[in-house]
Length: 254
Image 1: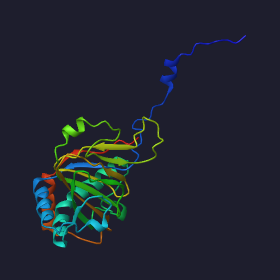
Image 2: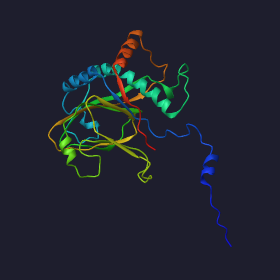
Image 3: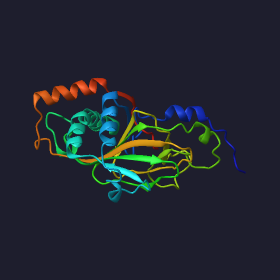
Image 4: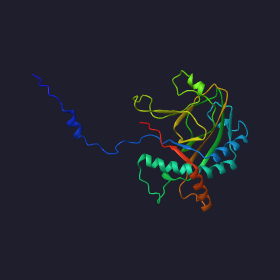
């Protein structure tokens, strides 16, 4: 005869030793910022002066007008972009739970960088940027102009994130439904996303007449001892960071 004993589940739960802070922040660190108006306007003005189509041959996008910035524009951008890179590196270290002594810098945790390339996209209706990744170590996208797609999105019946949406992809699509392997968002003017260069992402086309203007680029990190900033440059970067308002920390992948 089999004896059926009732299990006291509550007593079992009490015996479990729960590790405080035991969850793992696993996956690429993706940060969302709101850039200052002077950086937005400067990128737009300098981009409008660039030669139309000058960046098309190097890029994956199915976009007619992609332009490269001049060397002078890139130098200007580096000075204004450095505070965001510094914040990204320091925040990603906290996200991963690593302990770093910044008094003993190493190449793995350097905030000094070399700009590989910088370009501006003028994306019109029916154009798109298929799933792709970038070269280098870190990449970003900054949105300078965004068309009104509210009506088109309201009428959208598809399964993707929808017209004009941007989606990051990470990991295997066979993951359980509760494990997120993609993240989609609608761009907003002044929004910037910084992410690891190898993270796959795509931009969905839209049909509403209009132009969406965005700036992207890639960088790799230097050894901390390779370059040094003057006091004047450090003060400029601090002033720029005071204006920069960070609006989100990271995407929860798992």
